[in-house]
Image (cartoon, rainbow, N blue to C red; front, side):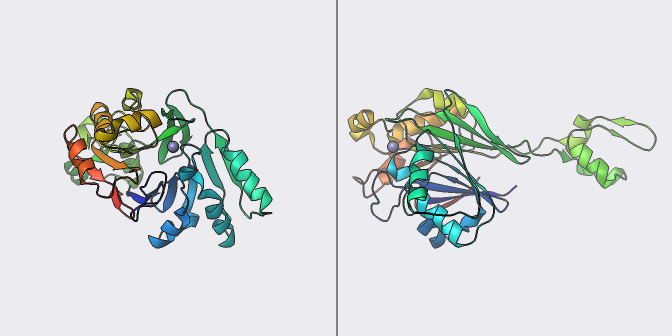
Length: 303
Ligand SMILES: [Zn+2]
């Protein structure tokens, strides 16, 4: 499965230094999921050549404006491009009322259905599943009700050993069954156990979206072993007091979560407008966790 993440906006609170407000697009075989939708998200989708009508679900972390003010404009543009397919929007209470009021007041009529799924998990909870992947939500620690999300593909199929395929005449149907874990009985009635004829599948691809939050070790438990962890780092340690007061994290704290979670890769973002250069975020994080990416608008990361 090819899964690609595009950062549409990486700034906190205000647009600054060419950095736009929070939004991440995850593309899975032509289907897209959007995580947060800061103001201007639809412009960023256009700028980076992303089709807004491929978005099937939108996951909003919380109702601070920099994380969801882009929704009305995005939905309106979907309507104007004659969208037919339904859209699902996940987020905390208050989201449906806020967006609903704008859509009502603007007398918007929609040719597609918009369904709000209001969530309030107190721990990690599965909120979506299909035959390709699952999405979980879990609480973050912020100044308003805020949730993080974990995307996880379903267990990939087993790989059949090449020497086995060459030695036996296996039907397409049997190949499917073996890849799904079945044993195989050959034409002489001999049983070949799954473990002897297959190799383990590759690692599950996964991505966690954690914005906005103060340092919270529970997150590490909920996303254990994640492939790509996006964790906010609004501040550097030098401004830790601000981070503590506003329930945000520093680069070092984000890196500590990545380490505790045994993540493969850490993507930093939600940078405060007080910092123009971001090199120090990388240095600070790398004192704790080696594999760090500094997010920027338009950056693509393969899961
Ligand atoms: Zn916030």
